[in-house]
Amino acid sequence: MAVRVGIPRALLFYLYFPMWQAFFNEIGVQVIPSGRTTKSILDDGIREALADVCVPIKLYYGHVMELKGKVDYLFIPRVVCLNGKTVYCPKFLGLPDMIKYSVDNLPPIIDVRMDSRQGRLSLLNAYSEIGRYFGADRITTIRAYLKALGVHYHFRRLLRKGWSPPEAMELLKSPGTGKAGSQTKVNLKFAVLGYPYAIYDSFISVNIVEKLRQLGVMVMTAENIHPALLALQKNCDLPKRLFWTLSDIALKAAHLLFKQGRIDGILHLTAFGCGPDSLLNKLIEMEAKKHRNVPFMTLMIDEHTGEAGMATRLEAFVDMVRRRKEAHLCQK
Ligand code: SF4
Image 1 (tube, rainbow, N blue to C red):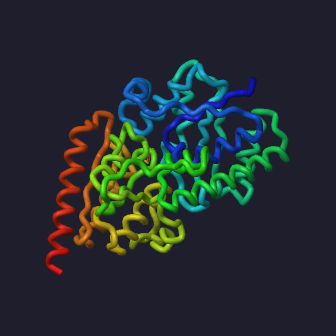
Image 2 (tube, rainbow, N blue to C red):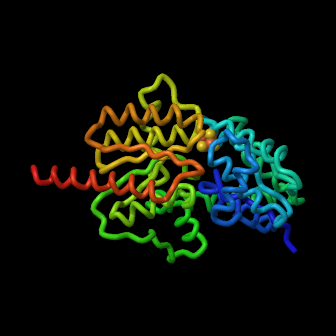
Image 3 (cartoon, protein in one colour):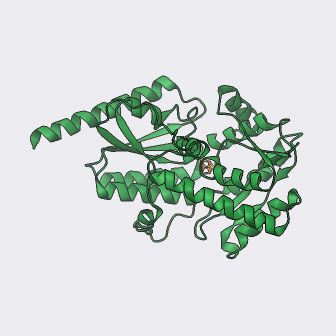
């Protein structure tokens, strides 16, 4: 029987799962992702994690608990930097240690450091280190790494075409079967900015994307924007760019979309207990004040976020934007 590696459905799962799965499969390892978030997964995470960590990290703990006892290894890489420029939030850097020293009786953790600032071959070397856990030689890991990069490239292309990460993953599994979720008559287009692991975890985000679609709103996120367009935003009028990779992307997307003014509304989904968000949300709000033609709203999620409260706020915002747009069209 093939060795089974568990990958928690949280944090970078939403951006890198297809790549990781392709790599592991190519070296003969079976990948078991944890299931979709449920109340019991969230409750497990809340029980195991420190009280003051952000809700996405609590969720990560819950998904680790879901995999405990079902797999031979857990894949929890120490992701520092993947673009040679910005780094992931400190929680990502300490993740393997946090999990290892706070949850008992876990299977061995594959804890490799991924830091592309350490040289051109650093990521390949990290994947070679993963391969060594399973006795794969250098040639096999290089071949698996190249295959994984190909899958990742294809996945990113699907995101740029407008698919969400869960939809793109479905499309990779069975091409031609992807569905862009239920959609009533669309006459508004919103951007939902924030961390992919908050937006696309339908439990913790209270299914924000699907709710907006049902209200007749086409939804885009930063993942749907070409990285070259984001790169044009440079430091977003700051003396230097934001340190944290995902905050930097969200800020750049906000600057681009506010400046373009072609979107009907922007929502920023922030996570309770997130250090980087306390700065990022202020910076996005400051940009929003310069572009009052684009309605903006912040929504905070935490472990107690209620479906009814979120739905009411979304409905009110959509209604306000729709009336505003209709009034604007009547004036023309
Ligand atoms: S960026 Fe914020 S939400 Fe994400 S892991 Fe770090 S502290 Fe948590």
